[in-house]
Image (cartoon, rainbow, N blue to C red; front, side, top):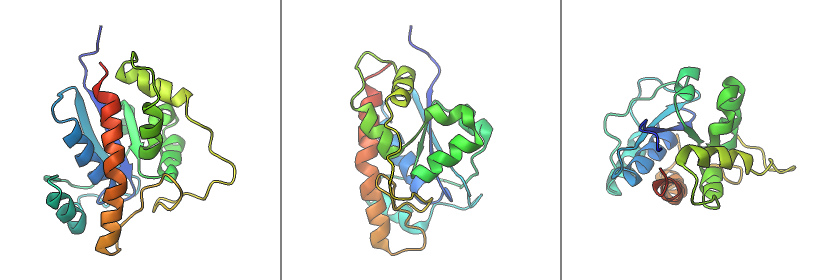
Length: 191
């Protein structure tokens, strides 16, 4: 029997004013036709109470995606505990969540990592089973992998546009968009 509880997704970046609000809004837009999902965001070093960065909000608005009344908030163990899937902007964020809330480690992936793994999962898995399957099939961190920082920069990390030119915001959005579409496609077909 399928669960009637909503499937909760948490998007994480550093300040919760650029990447994670974009991840939240894009993923929520992709899943908007299904009330089975709740998507929210937070930051590891949140600029608590701040609205989304104006350039990010403007570029997303131009793409038809609204951030609404977003206000940055700090991630905490309670927030990570109540979410079924935690998607981070960088590997460093994933490591931070795993270190601060070890119980959430198996539900925490970079956005790019989960998008790639989920696409290979057996079709008969439920959403929650998909997350467990993805944790078991996550490749180990490659030796010699470029160092990830919370600003991004390593392969698979979403670049942090904060304080940078509009073109970097556009690059960040261009990284996030296909990944949120892939995650939504993998989740949408499951109960």
